[in-house]
Image (cartoon, rainbow, N blue to C red):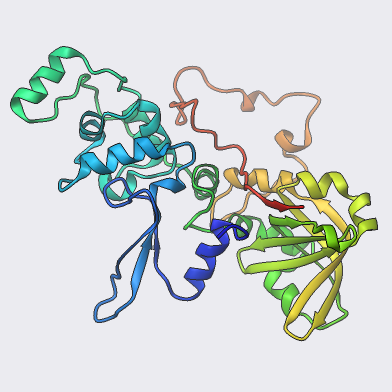
Length: 338
């Protein structure tokens, strides 16, 4: 739908009671499709996200996966790899998008770890045995390893990185306690405030518009866990905050509410970059936001390093490192119209 980001469309569908389901290796086709609703005795349908939502996955590889699936679901990643004949890189892209959780019960980390044992060409001995016996034989037999589960924030970060949206918690909800302390209200609060009120709100930047007929005025759409806020940025304010407006993934805006009938805007006066706050989402959990006091050396620095902060020798709890799994930052693809 061109102008609207997928995250906006999905949010609107969910707010209207539509069940939106994640990418699944055994049920997703290339395009998003409709499935029977889990609610009995209703004529409603659920929406299944398609493989086209997986960033980097080509149409050709997705077509091979769907064609090989035909009338028999994949039983495992090994089974998928042999039957579909797609590159390991394609399987990795689906794993990063959490596409194996529903069918195989594998988390991102477990799926990526399983894919590490695959190659683009299987060994002839195992290929011949698999064809002869009609069963899937693993090339490598490894002991079962329990990987540390990702926290809630990391899961949401990876959703946005590899699908462009999350069906879990909205990333801004992890920052809400901190934003509330700074008297930054939700987008829903800002859009329902009385005309002429001054306030500050914050959200992820979804859309930037600067029509040629608007004489330098920019329109921005922000989103948080409560909804969206529409901003009007006059030319003078835009020039003062150009770098932040054009580059920040998340901003806070202090301005004046302007209501004209059903149309509500927040006229921006001061804009601040909250991208560092957004980048911290991967460190947070849904129930407890991380608090950093004055004695926190990691965030505030220290002249003398604390020996207790030095990593112990040998393996620790976090003993598995998957280089393709980047859980540090969250990036949202903004729709820019100029």
